[in-house]
Length: 395
Image (cartoon, rainbow, N blue to C red; front, side):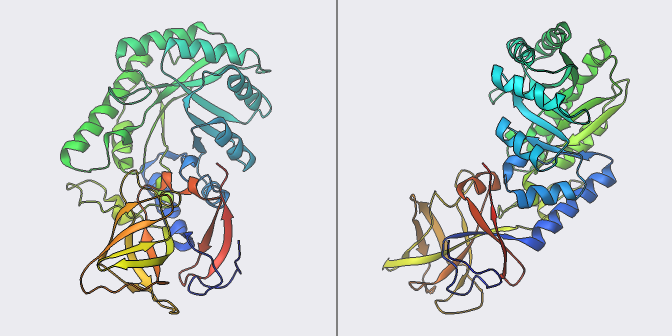
């Protein structure tokens, strides 16, 4: 990796393609979400899987978040090594070795809080059996995951929820501590219809929690944890979960992660009274790459592809270019990514738009959760694209 810190991306020092993180946008997004949570009276446990980059995770932890959220045991260990004392493992743990490790990690630090999810009686049994192989001397806190029919994990019905709660209560080393969910599976279209679906799902989670509280499954707990949250509907999570009436105290925790870097997805204006997330956060990630070839009129090929860019929720958007040998950004609107190969992007070039071999393209990316895993290192830059550091990821 040939790079000189302090130089700008306009020079020839930096090899491309390169993932770029804009420091000022990152910090603004972190501060904005923290302020929103403080004003709403909720806690924040950002999902680490979005970036798994210590430079981002440390910034989130140092900003005073309640804790972190992870999806895997390896992500959990990274967050603990970075100093997180509270972690939600937003997944089911059914492997005995992993469960035993969870117990040991909890036991080694009396101040540490770790939560994981259960969504079936089978999961409860496997988790409890694995924990008995650890040194854990206290009950391990679990959250009931509420799912969405046709999608992924999480119990579907109140009858399932009650059976799972009974199974947890029957285990001597588990304690039911709250309810968890993820509304982001419904989609990212903030239309009135989609928002109604989100509210219905979150309301069902609250209803499950209220029934479990009424049946005494949270007895002995000072408060019930209610947690959910991607980065598109976080305001609806707050509105619905904060309105829960459980007959006992509750603690609302957001798990949003993508807010920190945001992305270049073009959101429609939300309905009146709904937070416009796209107006709150700034896109902090870009992909810089070179034009490799202009083999036909109206077609160009750039040096990035599926190995460098996300493509699951939308193809990259060409935002600007730097002419070969130039040192300034020129906004450009006539270039569209048609498709991606492994390391090549096929570009449609509109009439009247000129691209030359060696031109540098600045591309916006969609869905940050499938960007950072493609990179071992990326450039952190200031507003003048001067490179401040080369940061690593730990997937």
